[in-house]
Structures are given as structure tokens and as C-alpha cells.
Length: 167
Image (tube, rainbow, N blue to C red):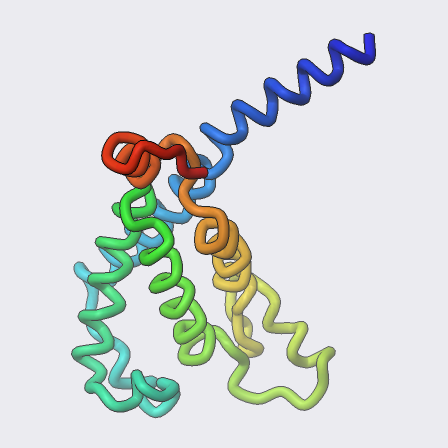
């Protein structure tokens, strides 16, 4: 019976190498694509928060920041879903999300950790709303550090052109 448990765990590990990162990429990619398309169809509101942009993003206009955010969310979202340039786009979207937290999701003012914790929510009731972007950051870390997984264009390119499997 112990042998069967090892076989089952080995099978789950092998399935995970193909499907684990795919699921992560599809969910994150869809969320970033959806956010980018919402920006693409919407009005640029970055001018209202331009003073909150950290360096070096504070050096460019709100219009350029809007276009960069929109472009990286759309192209990066698609790239994550298909697993192409995964580490690059995951890193770019990580940086974009950190900036988004600083600009739009972090509480305007807090004086204690208890007050800051009130911002760990999905909808903003005046204390910030950094829960979802923080979850996205945590989800991007495995893609940055471990790559896209075996069911990706990155892995296919590595196998086809470089003769090696990539995780």
C-alpha cells in the first residue's frame, strides 16, 4: 500500500509540472488582460493621482504612465496566458502592481498596524484596498522564480530549439 501512495504522489507531481503553473498563468493573465482592456476602453484617471507615482514613474506624464500600464497589462496578460516571455512579463507586472499599490490601493494615511490592516480588503471603504494586488504579487513570485511550467510556449521553445526541458 505504501508503494501505491508513492506512485500516486509521483503522478500528482508530474501532472503538477504540466498544469500547476498553467492554472496560475491563466488566472493572472486573464486578470491583467481584463484590467488593461478596462483601461483601454476607459478614461485616463492617472492625472488625479500623478503626485503619488514613485520614481522613476513620477518623471513621465500621466498619459505615458496610463499607456504603459495599459500596454503591459494587455500584452503581459496575453503573454502570461500563453507562457511566452513569462519571467519578463511576470517581473514587469510585479513592478506595475507595486506601483499600483503605492498609487491607488495603499491607505492615504495610517498611524498603526491596526489601521493599515483595515486596507487589507477588496473594496475601499476609505482605508485603502491592497488585498487583491498583494495576492497578485504573491502569485507572480512563483512565475518569476520558477518560470511558466511545462505547458507553455517558453518551455516549448526551450525543448525545440535548445534541446532542454524547462520547468
